[in-house]
Length: 173
Image (cartoon, rainbow, N blue to C red; front, top):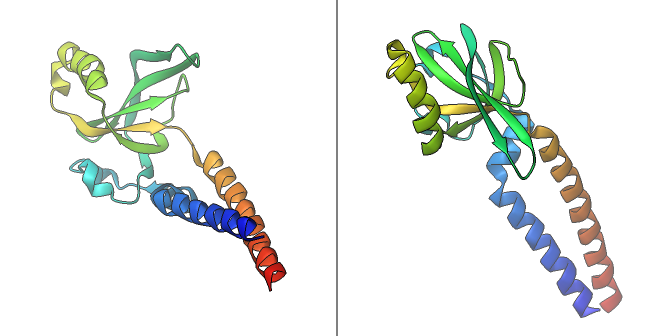
């Protein structure tokens, strides 16, 4: 009996630790996407987003950059777009072949290889874009479905463990 109590208590603590560790992610799943003001975005830094990293932004124009990324393991193909917002440019990575000027996704730092290969090539080809790119990118994927599934399954497992913890504790008395 005491072993069952320990197992359920450990499971509850593990689920609570996972929820606390992923609190920012779950916050964005529940409350996002957060609308971004294009004027404020022009001077924004990655640190300005705080907890709100799952966003929606409206640009003036969007163009395919001509670059794609293939992952051999999963056979995924992602396209890179340039979203123009006033005089600034935002690099957007998406599975889609075409995007609207209204884009939703996660704000992420630009990996050095992507900065060098894609942004570097664009700035070399189109010198007027030199320095126009924002210091972050938008990964246009809606990963909220997985978050909702995780919360539902985690909540059910938490309820199961809590119920069985109390059942085991009553049997000892």
